[in-house]
Image (cartoon, rainbow, N blue to C red):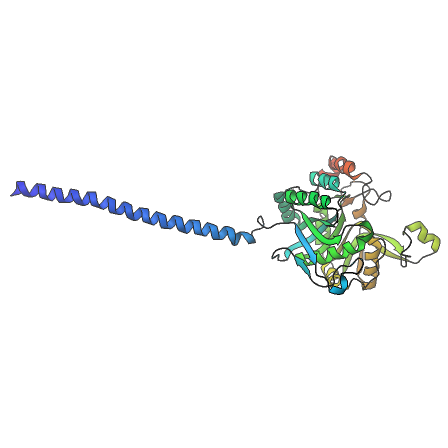
Length: 351
């Protein structure tokens, strides 16, 4: 009967319509749960493993510990001739130039003013500087037995993350040993065309330094600096300075002023293979490096823009030559120079 069949058909369709949404909702909910679990797992794995390869996740400050042979432990001024140990699995970072800024425990103010002028104080700023110039920058410092100084340094490292910490005593008289340790560590950490040693009391134009290092050179063994003449032989008991050398009638050789100079990768690779007693250590670091360059017969490239007494349209490094080895009052003078248009604002002209 039509009247009886109609309601039956209607009731059957209504039951199916009520059943189907409940079944579909359960399936969708199940699928969403699975997707949520997969996404959470992916994010966890990415954070744990993939994040290690991200530049922003890697610590920039590195502690370097030198392996020592047992016979080295009692050796004075010993820096290991063996391999170095670096905290964490660090791969060599490819850059055009690596700049190590030599600093000490008493130079907190200098580092502060550097980060307020030509050197960025944050990770993003350092990254942008590296991308625009091809240069990486780190402060280079040794260790001390004064725990309070190490504690202060640790806080600064945590805040700025722009150091390489060498396992060598931070002392002015041991600067040549620190310099050798620096080049060995820098070569192990950075795959660079040039390695630059700079002091923390000079006003530097990274963009112009980048152009200098980027020039094509026929000689792969190159030593770039603001060159001066110094004695071939120096009495280690005497503090060397040029007038005394004139009086003693010493022979002369060219070497770079200490505040800033650069060594090509091939030169630094040779230095990394040296035993620490291979060459003589003089009391002055710049004389020491210069004597090694003489012995290695490298190409000396003299550039007076690395020792400008004032900011010009071509100056690369500015310091109070010859009055001081660096800026005479760096914390004040650095800020004053940075305010001058000819120092910080003048364009970089490609040659």
